Image (cartoon, rainbow, N blue to C red; front, side):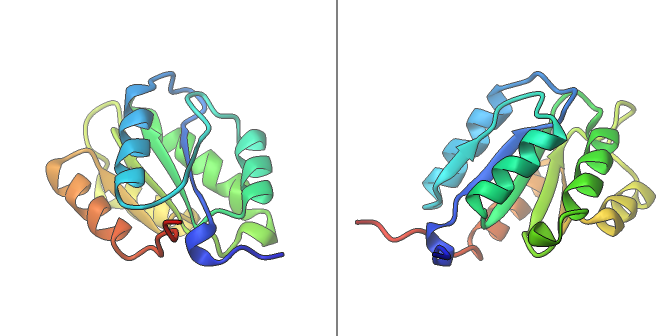
Length: 145
């Protein structure tokens, strides 16, 4: 049985090299505040685990978060592996946070992340958070029973 869009969870994960957790807790609470069910995979999520969970849950959205500055490199590897699976090709995936160790990613890196398969790339600025919130408003919410 295919879940209805509002019943599909949002998967939240930290990059494979990122051991930070508070960003993931914040994202989970923000998503829940916007009416979404969340499966939080935690920090340091290997690509194989993310793929297995995405196949099992058929999420409405996959959110990859980075705080350690290696988001660009981790994110490229993650989305490349994710998009190798035809069943996951249509699942929206976004990445955000501190994506570069030298500061925000430039337009070339953002374009590369998008070309690799991310639907949206958010930086860790106030505008990036505001844009993420606006995107959440476009996702179907679960029905409250």
